[in-house]
Length: 250
Ligand code: MG
Image (cartoon, rainbow, N blue to C red; front, side, top):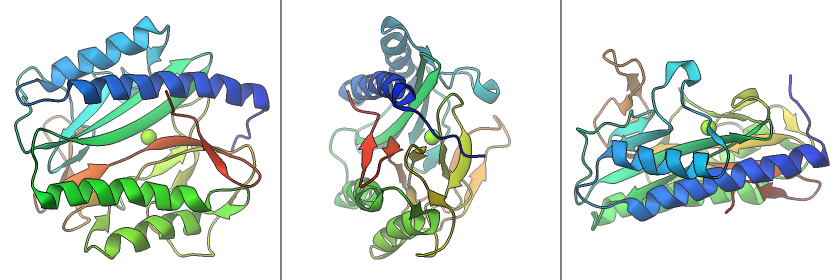
C-alpha cells in the first residue's frame, strides 16, 4: 500500500534528506586514492550522528555499516572494510540513508577516484543524467512505466543496461515502502504516483550485461556477472502537483 505524506511529513523528510545528502557529500569530499572504504563509512556515520540522526542502513536486514560502498564492478551493497582501499582510476558508489523525526532520506552518488578513464567517466555522467531524465517527468499521476522507460531509453542509447534485479522504492517512515520503482519499463504502463507520494529513484547502470550476482560469502555484495563497471545515483523525491522536489538536498 502506498503511503501519501502530509505537508508536515514532508518537512520532516526534508530534514532527514538533508542529513543523508550532507553525509554523502562529506564522503564524496573524502574520496581519494588510498582511503579505506571503512574510513568513508566512519565519515558518513559521524556526520549522521553529529546531526542527531541515525544511519538508516546500520543493522537494516543485518547490514553491518552506515553506508554501502561499491567499487567498480560492485553494483550496490558493498560492505565497508579496512582492507578495501580506493585506488586511482576506480569509480566508487556511496549509498547513504539517514533517519530522524520518524522519517528516512536515501541517496547515492558515484565518484571518480583521482583520474579515471573516459569510459568510466562517461558511465558516471550517463547514470547521473538518467536520474535527471526521470526527474524531468515526475509530477502527480506519472506512471511507473514512464519513469522506468525514461531511465532505460536514455542509457541504452549508450549501450548500457539498467539493472533489473534491484529497483527504487517508496520511502517514508520505513526505508523501503511500496511501490517498487524499476529502472526500466513501458511508457504509458504501470501504477500512477499521486501527489504526496515519496519515492527513492535509483538507477543502477551497467556498462555491459544487466545480469548481477549476490555474493555467497557475505550475502550482500552485488556484482556485475561480466565484471564490467556499474554506476549508481539516487535521490529521494516528493511528488507534487506539477513537478517533484528533491528531498535529499543539503
Ligand atoms: Mg534506496
